[in-house]
Length: 173
Image 1 (cartoon, one colour):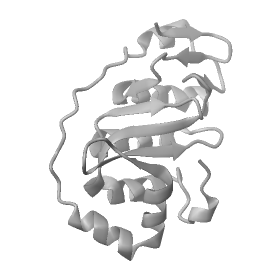
Image 2 (cartoon, rainbow, N blue to C red; image 1 turned 90 degrees about the horizontal axis):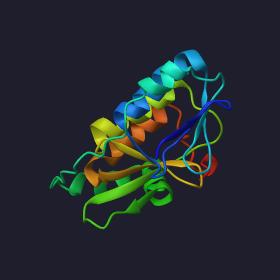
Image 3 (cartoon, rainbow, N blue to C red; image 1 turned 120 degrees about the vertical axis):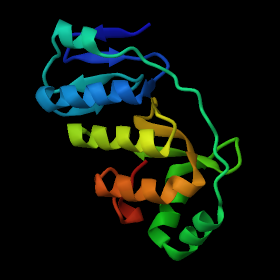
Image 4 (tube, rainbow, N blue to C red; image 1 turned 135 degrees about the vertical axis):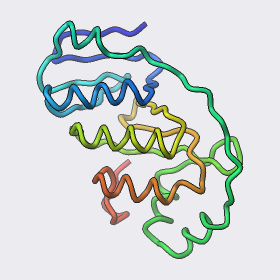
């Protein structure tokens, strides 16, 4: 069930799973509807309500098949020892995956997200993850199935988009 209501424009995805196409559609709407805030339970609020046509135009959620890659781990381990900020990011905002060589990445959300930040998350999920993001009850976005070998570029991408701060002491989960 995907319920969309008009009270400050919220959409609810019961599985809290968004594929990149749906996240990009939300980012496009944010260009005209204002910044986005994520709510407990997977809802999204825009500054300005969506029209019925905009709601109906949102793509249906898709779940992509995951293809696991066997990527080398040596650069990942070396990057952690050479870059304290990257190591702090890995320790604080990633969780080992059940599959060796992969991690779940947690992007903490503090307030509103602009269209540009949403697009950056979609880009990261598409190019460095498996094209899916999960909105969690603790109001964070999670990128599942990210190969360890791609965590450093992901860290750089999230830092460039100002989704995480370069100073670990200022991160909040």
